[in-house]
Image (tube, rainbow, N blue to C red; front, side, top):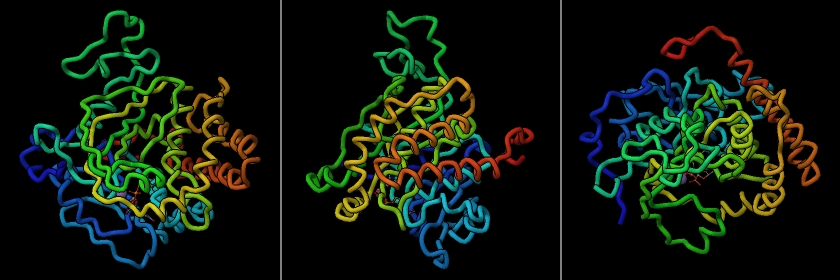
Length: 365
Ligand SMILES: O=c1ccn([C@@H]2O[C@H](COP(=O)(O)OP(=O)(O)O[C@H]3O[C@@H](CO)[C@H](O)[C@H]3O)[C@@H](O)[C@H]2O)c(=O)[nH]1
Ligand SMILES: [Mn+2]
């Protein structure tokens, strides 16, 4: 039986890496008591809390954390009409936190995710592992059968081309979950009691040309390398689909990472996901996505970006045009989504003017 760790205090001996270069983004409709368990790992970092739902509700943040909190009124005030691209009443709202951050790295986590234990019973500092993943190269161009060659105790295996051993910059570190796995609603309904107790001690680079279902529950990325692609789409209130926010961002991100020669890793770290959301509610949210994705995936698999697409923004705008042209015929929703993708980039560039002076260690321009 996997339980959440309780001895996190003992587990924190390392100086917090990237303390002034990383923001932790949390979407929430609840109080943030879960932070107590993460305190030893998270307290040194700045939090960006995106409060979803009723902005008049007061969200209690435990004492001692350095944070900024944005509710829907703040989003509307800051973005004006462009706020239309930020979802309401869906965890997709978290991408607003990516946009307002001034730091190089983002770690995003759900408020029902707790500190997990590794097989030895040690508390897992998920943030520390993500930082190791994101600071070491990826190997998207040739698969290393001994997994991450940059980890202590591993290396490139025989036959791995030396010309490729420098690897590629890592843009994304995708963590996993013990206890409640991130299953879709049909799988949840068929296997309501299934719990993930399998701890796999591996970090893998997802090969170039391969898509993956990105989960936003336990995710870290380099904002400078791939931030503008991390738009979590139009979900929730007033939209025909939900729970495809992170997936959409992941598909766009992977196509752009492949084009720009950036790496995406998945595997460690694990968090302990404590709450299964309601499978019937999830089925309603996912319903259209379950058959739309049979068109969406071939679209992303076939997507190519021209050589003029030399920045994430240019790639993303190019992708939005292809979404409009090729997915617009699947459903008018994709027309709207393609427009929202453009609005997102406009808002991103407004809040993050390119060529802004170098950001100091506190991420202030
Ligand atoms: O309307 C909402 C609902 C929730 N949130 C916040 O978002 C996260 C996730 O919420 P929850 O844990 O209840 O839902 P899950 O189904 O476990 O979420 C995962 O499934 C995918 C949904 O797209 C995604 O991969 C995960 O988020 C919590 O922090 C809630 O407080 C919200 O902001 N608005
Ligand atoms: Mn959850």
